[in-house]
Structures are given as structure tokens and as C-alpha cells.
Image 1 (cartoon, rainbow, N blue to C red):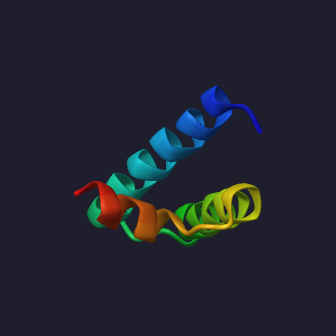
Image 2: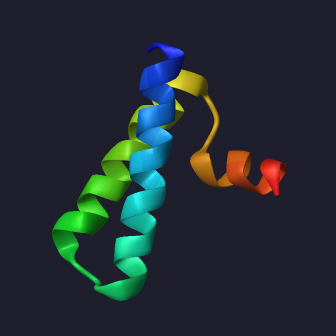
Length: 55
């Protein structure tokens, strides 16, 4: 996966996280899990751990 694709994936993850805070939806939750799985598969790290390192 290219860097630009990874950035898009992370941006989409952040957007979905904001949507979940507003409205709990099963479809949105499934999409979030799918993104987390893709990220883990490509990098070997979880999104949550990478965000904790940044902040």
C-alpha cells in the first residue's frame, strides 16, 4: 500500500470516529473495524497505538 493510500485510510478512520461519536450505527462500526484491520495488515501496528504515540 502506498503512503498516499495509508493517509487516506487514516483520514477516513478519523472521519468515521467522529461520526460514531454523534450517531451509533452498526454499518459505521463495521467500516471502522474494516479500516483497522486493513491498517494492521499493512503495517503490523494498530491505529490506536499509532495515534497514542503521536499525541
